Length: 254
Image 1 (cartoon, rainbow, N blue to C red):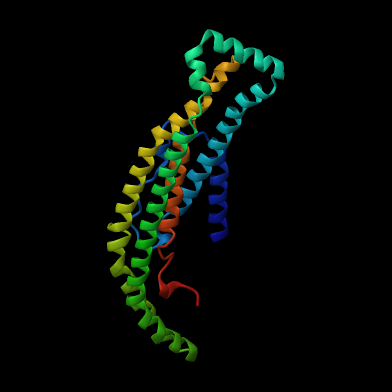
Image 2 (image 1 turned 180 degrees about the vertical axis):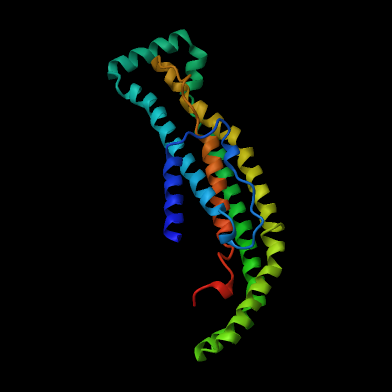
């Protein structure tokens, strides 16, 4: 039965790779689960399927976008020079903007984004440390007892202690998995990603301005910035909810 279920998941992910992402990729973000154990829902599988969908669409669009560079590269060097000079004569202001080095401004923006990502990552690591410490405090004494009993094979008492471990975990569950700081962090991270999209798209548009100098329209260029932001968010959800226990202790193999 498990083999069949696993096969269904793989088949679903395979189909997702061929499915186009929606116009607004944020609609791919699923509602957060309210279960304590991973086996109680299909959240991990849903995330994997949607990440696969986004990855395939990003790759497809990047290949289409690369065609603009291919068209530039295909031009004869003399033809390139001729088109640049012609464009500069007819559009001096636009040519100046296209040729200006926006490197300093772009570098500053990119640095700010990296710093923001680092802060977000550190905040999540801090929450993981708090969660791990709370779980360790609640369960370590019971685990120590259970390990001793397990060694002498006292099954009834082993199960009693296993159920105690589940009780302690389930006490923490509402504070962390059904609400609390993890969800607050996710909301903040999503806002951070959304806030950074316009600047990244603007940098991309600035970088594409040079196509006009070669007589190549970039009207059909499609940015992948928003899809990449959503993929980051989904991957963070995967990392975070992967911390849930998959199943109760008493039902886990030794």
